[in-house]
Image (tube, rainbow, N blue to C red):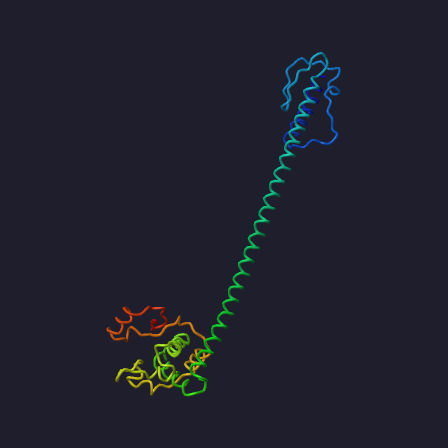
Length: 271
């Protein structure tokens, strides 16, 4: 009888321990120790599978077993609530991350739209400026394209900047046109190119004769055409020099008396 009692109580203890370890309580399962221990009288201390109780007076301490199962059930419920809370926190974090990414995406789109708008406005302004400059050149010099003035401009650009890239040649043409449009210089391309003080010409290729011997390349023709159509990045420059070839006195005068606006290739531009 005692052996049977121990086995039955051990079964209850193992069930309780298993429920505590697995955190699982079967629905509707009720363990009543009284049904397992009625009519038995065991007067010894029993500690089986974590279950301690005394069996006295022919009736086991069934309430202890019921309380243990209830405690396991409460622990399981608590763990379930904790898991739900963790799941809610994970969902909140995922939602916050999603919203953060959406805000970041909207900001990126706004920056892209703003950048496209700036580029569009810059292009529109550039077109207006080119049109106004072209009209100013035509007003001052008349029609230049296809005339002797264009050929003079091509030759001086080739002589001064034939080894430069397209932008460098266009800048030299811009300087000459800036002088044409200015008040302190002659009002035609020819007069600007051949301007001199005594036997000293403004442009060294005219002085040394290289102006007359150059072969105008297609790149120079393209650069001159761009300048005549109003393209200008010279920032109003009226002078330029190649420092490596310039006379030290002239270079010193440039640095003392003029404002340097940019450098491109081997040339420095001043106004």
